[in-house]
Length: 300
Image (cartoon, rainbow, N blue to C red):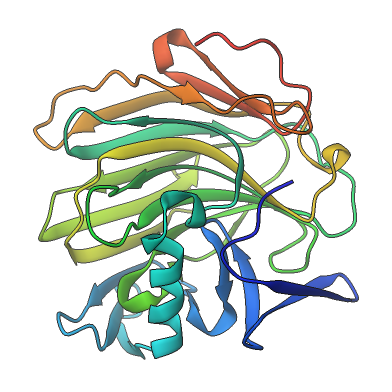
């Protein structure tokens, strides 16, 4: 199944939660961009705007709802971990199983999609499945990623079953994630990434199909140039039978450049994985269906 990150890990199961330790003894958590030390993951309980200080000393988080501000100091271990994830090669940033991807012809602005959650709840013991669209800045030093993510979790990290939240890796070496919203089999959700270019904001957001229950993570004064897009399944601790047989759909995908022009995605897809999973592209690239197992023939 999904490959591990650059870390040597030891698995120990405690009740339903998988506790994972790196070679340096730090507890590692499964994220949508690989294993990360637990102390490097910042979870926000409401919509949030984050600003990384120019000197890299930390991140300010402002919560528009409560009008509170918090400061999260940079940790050298988290910075080192992020460099290890991003500097070696892009495969170390992600432990992905089945996905579609393409290098964009110019710097990207927006990526929107309508998610349709499989009408199933895969059985199992402790699997964690992540589904998302995303942008990466592959031509910048230190690859990072922004992701509106749907989870299917039996590991104990989230509520049992389906839920969603936005993610951003990795200001000041930290992984920030927005408030978690509970979903159900067969639900639809709106997902978006709005980027305004280097020195401006990036908004990663999601809501239910009717616009209710929005969860939004805004990265202020961002300094990234997005030039790579994906639609992905990442899985942890899952056998083939513990992944989705019905497709997770990323439909009505719309991508625009920073200049505002529409970009037709030239998707490439992963080959048949160990479980015969994969991504199927239809509707001239506007729809991507992701299968954890028993993927039908592709139509690229």
